[in-house]
Image 1 (spheres, rainbow, N blue to C red):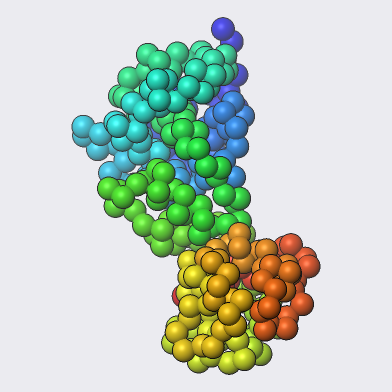
Image 2 (cartoon, rainbow, N blue to C red):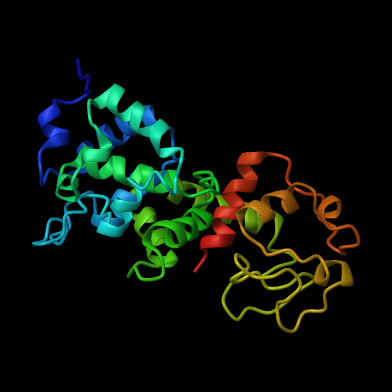
Length: 273
C-alpha cells in the first residue's frame, strides 16, 4: 500500500522526533484522516510537551510521546467494546497510513504519528464536541476534563497561558478586545480585580461565574434567575442581543452585531488578568 506524507515518513515515524514542524505536519495528516479539532490537537501537543521539546517528553519508562498519552488512555483507544465507532476510525487509519491500530503497542507512541493518532482517538472517544478555536477557555476546560483529567498536573490557566505564548492571533485579538471594551463597555463597567461597580457590575472573573452573582451589585430578578453561567458561548449570545437573551435585564446596551468584534471582546473579558 502506498503511503503519502507531506514530510518524509521517517520524520513522523522516528521515535523521539520533535519540533513545531513535525507537530504541524503530523496534525495535518491525522486531521485529514480523522477530522479536524479546531486547533485543539496542535495546542495539546504544545501544552503537554512543548511539541516534544520538553526534556521530560521521552523520559525512561514513559512512551506517550509528544501528546503525552498515558497507558490507560492509549488502551482506551483500542477498546472497541466501549467505543463502537473506533472500528470505523481503525479502517480510515489503515487505509491512509497502513497501520492496524488494534495491534499497535504503547511503546509505538514514541513516534509522533502514533502519538498524534492516539490523542485524536482519545478526543474522538469523548461524546461532546470540541469547542471552537476562538473559545480558548472552553477548550482549556475540555482538555482538562477529557484529556489531562483530574489526575493530571495541568490546569485550565496553564493551558491558556501556554497558548498565549505561541498564538499571536490570540494576542492580537486580546489587544483589540481591550480597545472594544474601552470604547463600548468602560463607561458602565470596570474589569480590574477588586474594581468598583458602576452602572453595571465589575466584570473581573466574569468567565465561569454564574449570572447575577457578583457580590455587592444589585441585579434584576431576570438576571439572577436566568440560570446562566458565563463562558465564551453564553457571552457571545448575550452580547449579540442582551435583551433578547435575558428579557427584563436593565442593561441598555444594544449589543455587538459584528461576530469578530464580539469574539475579540470576549477574548479580553475571559483572559484579562
